[in-house]
Length: 205
Image (cartoon, rainbow, N blue to C red):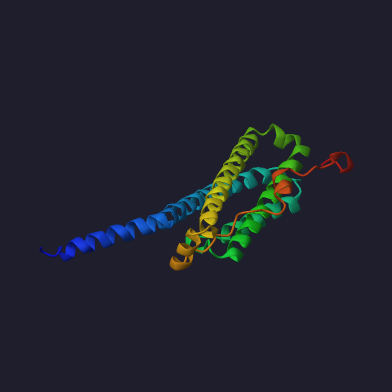
């Protein structure tokens, strides 16, 4: 009886390896890692979209000669800090980098909420169609940011469950698939809600 060709054994070995990798979650790691990268790119896109609207908003508000300069300055400074921090998909394994990014974006969101709340005290701004259009665009942008961020959080959750579950956690250790830091904001409710401003206690401008 003739021995089986070497290539036959190699084919069987390759098949066994393929089944083994698939069964231990290797292919799932590939897929979920790609999903988290794609979801993070969308988060960055939506934050950039928001940042791109701010210069026009600032120019419009500057037309209101007696607008609160401190409020306006905080928006300008917060935008500068937020756009200076970019976390690429390759940097997502660095919890400190993600935390700095979250903090900067949260500060910008807070500053924008303050500006929009204060603008209610200025009849000229309320009547300015350009300002109102920008406000609507910003609100839409915030909604897109929320959706993109939630998708990223879900993608990371699915990835981390795989990375921590047995036996796929053995594959994670073997191939270096570390759990990814989540995207959470400590004062999420505060950031998402425009501040309450008692205009009755302020001098009318």
